[in-house]
Length: 191
Image (cartoon, rainbow, N blue to C red):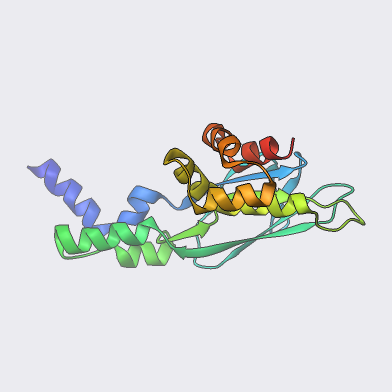
């Protein structure tokens, strides 16, 4: 009984978002070409392909992508209410009548960055954005919807990609289904 009371006390006094989501968020960054250096406030996070943990905040986050011979790119991550806020609401409404919202709001774990998968299309110095870049951007922004539609036999997003790429939906569906990341599908499309 005492153990249960201790656990309940910990949950009541701490924010559910902190407990279940943590203060950091994992973000995947890939690029064409690979080996692009990703910076946050001048600090090197690593080279693409990169999986990194970023501290959650309520402010948008700006990253920089740099590679010798290419134009620097800026990457903006929006900060929106995330799963931490949902956990707090559910916990307050259905379990205790109280919430750890103040804890999560103060350490900003109620927020999440979007997107959490990023593809950076580096442009060589002196060149302009190309048709391939539009396909790369579309796949990156719509990867989850493409995966869902491919699993269900098609949909508007798959149709739009087919029209944009000039490939049939029948050829696209298997490529979408076997792709684990946007960069996998992009490489398959641009062979």
